Length: 156
Image (cartoon, rainbow, N blue to C red; front, side):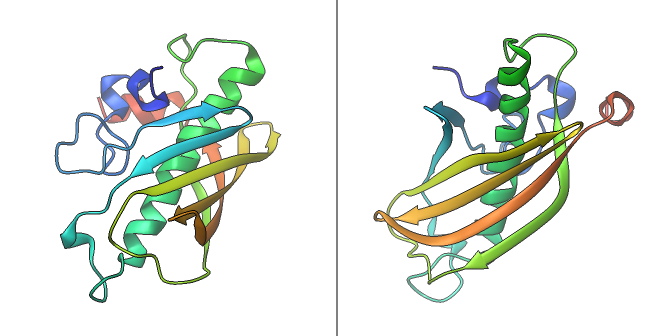
């Protein structure tokens, strides 16, 4: 199954978190798992904040990009369209709220799960939770706003 991010056109595929054209970025891959979205990510040693734990900014960026990709997929799903159909649904972050529930270990794979809370016009609200070893460590909410077409054209 292709990840949502595999369908991003080149002019919007440079994002540090999810862009497949950014060799220095996270290059996360998000897919549907029933009504939820899921991303798997393994932190690198340089993602450390305190020895043994992942940097909170890393976790926030994972929530951010997982959620905007989830928002795009939700809009395609609602419209009954394939993710590579045009015009493209692409989203930017309108707001990002993160609650750190407990320290996130740096060792092992993180599972990031999103749930679409609301689709209203050009906005999608996504609740995303990060799990380490099956334990919820961070929860976030993103209000994703549909990117105007002129925004991605300016980057081309």
